[in-house]
Amino acid sequence: MLLISEKEGEKKCQFYVRNDIIYIIFGTFPDMQAKWFLEQMAKFYEELIVGKDVNNLDKLEKHEIDRKFEARLNYINKEFKDLIDNQVVSDQDFSYVEDQIRVDYLGLSSMSIGVISLLVGDELELEAPGEYDDPEEEKEMKESALTARIEAIAANTLGNTGAYPRWIAVKLGFQNYRFLTFKKYPNEYFLYILSEGNLKKLSLLEEEFDKYIQHVVDSPFSGTLKPFNRLKSTFKEMLLKKRVYK
Image (cartoon, rainbow, N blue to C red; front, side):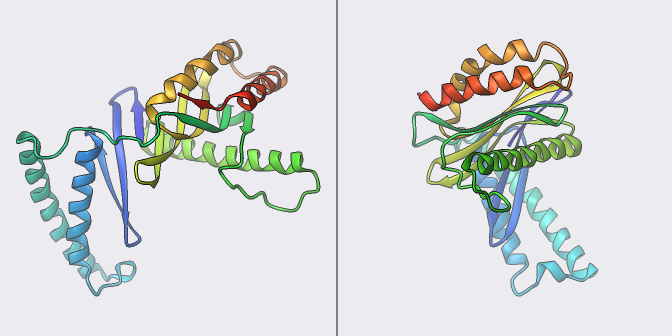
């Protein structure tokens, strides 16, 4: 996750899951260096909890594990700095298999109110609650449910960190990623895009969408959806013709 705040600028947060435990590192770092740090954290923590139920530790056990883990983190951090100084750990970000990016969803919101929600393609394999005879009605329900989840992610991230997420990446396979990206506009508007492929191609999407979005975000949301419905129709037509950018 890339976080952006007015006070601290850009900071990364990388998550690593191993054996149902989530390890997190936050700061300024290249992707490959963070990956090394997280792997060292996980390796030592697993040694500390062998034979223990981490969800049911008593206070003394938890304190002892935390104490030893903190001491090892200081050691890992020192070793980490030495490896960086000696250029042993790569200073590169993750690379991507694909040289393109595909749009699966586009949304626009104002003050956590969704004003555009557009799902394209069927790669996301979403389920809508309930049963529907009309495919369009089912699609609208999927769009609404997805928009609500994304807005909750944005609001929780902003509330807990004081920063808004620029992007969140999820690894699907070897050098294969899905992205949830956020772009802030005037008057508290945010553009959400769910995509898959190469994040470096994101600017191609946003530059194309900017041409149409700028004229509807020049004033605060008044409650009328008419201009946004027109814009949604424009985006729908665009993405039916082209949703892969190289």
